[in-house]
Length: 129
Image (tube, rainbow, N blue to C red):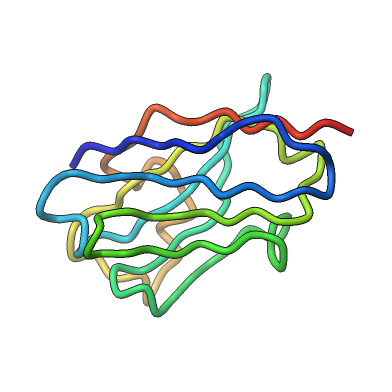
């Protein structure tokens, strides 16, 4: 699976942005997809994840209620709609794909970036105050 994130940019605090991640490969529709972010000087952190069917979504507490993850398996694309953006949301955002066929039920493995198999190059989101 190859992943390409896009849609990042500069936005004012309180604004919205939608970033996308286009995937190639036949296993996309069977993979949990996640968004992670990394701010300068900080470790990469979990933002959101979505099961392969799209029925189950998971969010970090810091973005719950503001961000929405979704996917379109027909287009091999996963999205992250970000609303009410804050300066602390500034980071490079990465999309990642989990192992094909691994369910999200039973454990929260998708929270740990070390459990994701494939990574895109990232897209920069800058939120000005």
